[in-house]
Amino acid sequence: MDGKLIYLMGPSGSGKDSLIDAARERLGEMNCQVIRRVITRSAESVGEDAVGVTPAEFERRQRAGDFALAWHANGLDYGIPRELDEWLKAGKHVLVNGSRENLRQAQARYPTLLPVLLTVREEVLRERLLRRGRETLEQIDARLARNALFIEGRAVDRPVYLLDNSGNLAEAVDQLLQWISVNAAPDQT
Image 1 (spheres, rainbow, N blue to C red):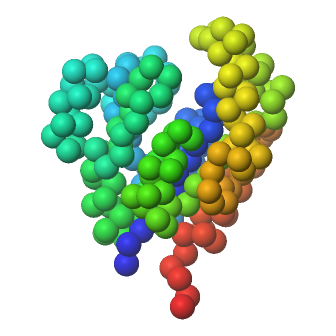
Image 2 (cartoon, rainbow, N blue to C red):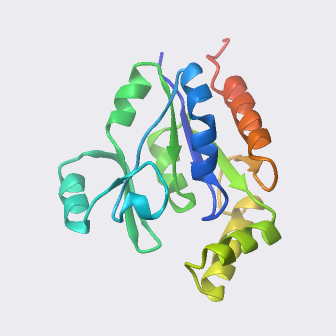
């Protein structure tokens, strides 16, 4: 039996890394692994459990076929190691910190993918982005507009589970784990 790919995505500032960190132990108890992304920036600079590589190293790994999924977004390259396929074939569920822009590619490769969009009320997200001070107001507005397309369902072909992370993180973790337990269960047919 193959495992399910849980594809978590959301705008910068939505709390994906915080959600993953808070859920990690309980995910493991549910036979769900969290796979580390490879990113062309220092992982320490973002607080994410990722592997930071140079653009040249990323390109070398991509040419060697080391990634199950890869994409370019916001001036950076992202890769999901091929280990993903091994875990899925072994029957493990795998949670990926994915990209909204790469969702269609991921769905084409993994038709049973379970997409989760981490949402945050616009005013909360705007405040989080302003507080971290990495982007201009124009960049923040662009992020908010792109996020609205997903929430309205205009940028995807299939339903996406919307998970609100505007408030208590523990509640968002509980909702995610409940949703995974229902949707990643083996088919009863």
